[in-house]
Amino acid sequence: MKGVEEILSHLVSFPVLGGESNLTIIHWIRDYVEQHGVKTKLVPNEEGNKASLHCRIGPAVDGGVILSGHTDVVPVEGQDWKTDPFTLTDGEDGKLYGRGSCDMKGFIACCLAVLPDMVNAELQKPIYFAFSYDEEIGCLSAPDLIIDIQKTYSEKPKYAIIGEPSLMKPVVGQKGICVLETYVNGSAGHSSRIKQEVSAIHESARLILWLEKKMNDLIDAGQIDDRFTPPHSSLHVGIVKGGIAPNVIADLASFHWDVRIIPKDNVHEILNEFKDYCREREKELQDVFPGFKIETIEHHPPVPPLDTAADQEIVDLVKRLSRNSELETVAYAAEAGQFALGGYQSIICGPGSIAQAHRANEFIDKDQLNKGVKMLMSLVGEMEQKDFS
Image (cartoon, rainbow, N blue to C red; front, side, top):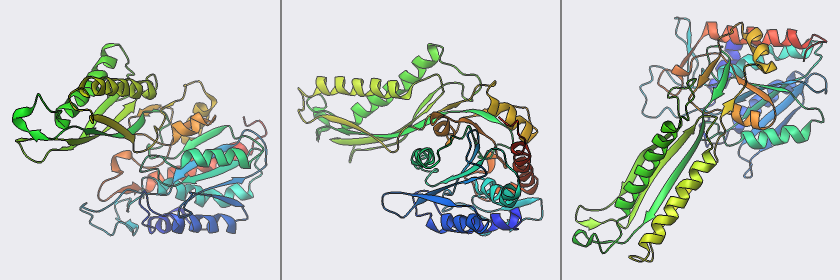
């Protein structure tokens, strides 16, 4: 049996970034799991260069628990690392340094370390592993993974624990996210003809101000959820491009933006309102320039928010397992909302702090890693009980 730190060392050594092939790490995980007599299934992408993995440990009966994690990490380029980011380094300060040590290979290592105990236990309800790819670039593979789980097993799992770093606190809410890019096609010309042409930059500015106003309108309408910081949906433009010279009317411009949605708001309604406004602008300005056009593309499908009610059974279960009764919400997106949409009572709870994710010298405290193992050992004990529900 490998210890959790040894397993984490192997996982960190795979430099699989979001968007890249993850077959090296997912095949290592598959081989490790199957060495313990557990049959796995890979869910490949269309190109066959990436795959998610799921498996069942225990009896084929309803009411099991899915343990969910992602195998990809964010880049290290341009960051000031003091150690090799893809070599797990014991800092002798109670911390283990390495990319993904916290987000979120630490949780996967806990799952694999406890696997022998799961296999040897007399489980009354099953435990499932569900490990995905491309979470870091938009939670892209979880929907297909969930669908395949539903097709593969005749029984239905009841709960899903997504092991994002939460300092072992149960997280019952997350914001959803959608990332988009809007392209504006205007007409080029001398800047003195601003009224005779259509400036792509000026029109982009109007659209950006519409997004800001929409955010403020939601706030003014009382669309507030004080569990989150900030306590409202945010609409933010992060990149603007366009123009070639101060005295040339820009015929092309674009801007990247995102929507981070609280559970009570509907991202599709916001996007439809924005598209309606774009059509209004097109109709008004195509008399000036018939080729004027606004096009918006989604960089990835909207990731749904998570809003798990405090009285759901998963909440009491994870409180017991983590020995932590303090419930939290987070502003970042994760796969938890997707599992909830798939029909599973879902919650985020895992070792490590999100404050260490995505930064140079990412680390996980050894104490957190051990708490993650203890939580999963407690899960095994719970699921050996005949009255587990």
